[in-house]
Image (cartoon, rainbow, N blue to C red; front, side, top):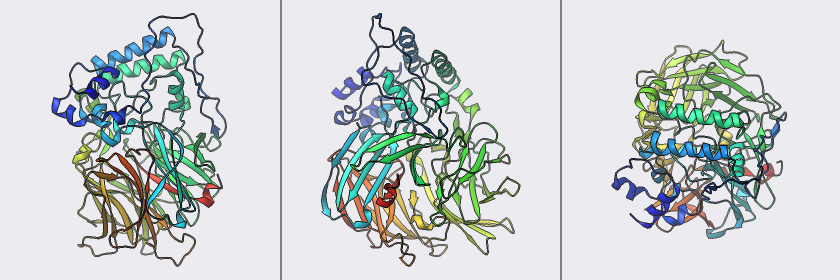
Length: 590
């Protein structure tokens, strides 16, 4: 066993049975990566007479709920807390050890998926070209970054949200990496160890669900945490609307964020829109650049399984529209809007209690017998009376790219990657192939036609934000090699014919180099005459051979997506999820 293995095994309680040696040796994280994460201190073996105060949840306010103040010096745990942690170790070691690679932290947190420490605003070096003036502002990317090394099973989706922001001004760049100070992050930082169980990996099987659920209930009753203050991670994406910037995760309310003049990232608090937003919101709201409105939804395991709503130009939330025609819980990660409609996908992934009870699987899984559907509802619907559902066998949408109206609103066209082998989405992502398709729904006849626009394995596709809900010509998509690693970015012209490969430009990052979701930034966002593709594609890219991370700026019009600027980053930026570019004028509104 190598040195890293000994170090890792000494800090994480081990299962009674480990994966095969071949898996372990190929999936361990290099020491320089994993050592940057703060490991929770072991509680003292003797008690003291010092009286400790149970962390209290923040007081509920109409709109903002500030995260708890972080205590710099952690108080010593109570006897009850030590008992809870002991039971937690028993569950992780003997009842539900991380045996499968998809929940084994030694596999999930390998290479550049390993977490990093926070980084205060730090100047960066532009090592190639120069940063265009239209990039004055900030590119911010969200992603999972566990605060503590996992004590047991851990899924890629379970990490605390960390924002990696590169602030650009007059050709200079500053990088800052900060956790989203969620209630979960703050309460666990204050106590010094994990308290809230992992949602995606902590409830695989009836026994694991029952024991971890019971332990969580006892922690709640003892006052260790209050789930009413949110248990979300805010680790998925960002959105800017109503002159506010939000970090998002679909299991909780949005967290309001701001950037300081020095480039630092601050969490303002959990935002409930004056008490009008309940429980949670999608991590993929759609913002209409022409109206300034934002459209969103939430989904859950109890009726109504889907609730649709929107925010006006000023960011004021409008009334909920519950969708009771969705008759069973489904995994609705994303959706699309047109000028007239909102489009939802009822896919084959959903709540899977039978597999959890009898097969030891996740409570969320695939149902191969289910026929996927697409639902279309008027964009400004007051109720679900005009909701229409269309069967679309074999179409499983995780991310939607865009949609628009045709034929005077009688036809809806949507662009989205279709996830083939959907049963592997949560467990074996490397086996997933995402085929970008153009889907056409004739609302008069009910006929749905589909065709792929590329044969490549593409996901995390974006477009010029000014074309959301309008007919667009170009997409920029990440190339899976395989997913979740991204080997490059391609540009697609989706106006090409039905049976043509639509890739018109490509940039592969090179051997051992992997990036993330691309993002398009227009050169002249205020110019209505500007070409749709007149701008830049940006992304973080990491070289696994050298350990160096860079920020790349690519010319979206060039046939090879030529690099016009490269910024050497002062520290490693892990692979993550979704990002957003916010212009300087919008940052000033925060």
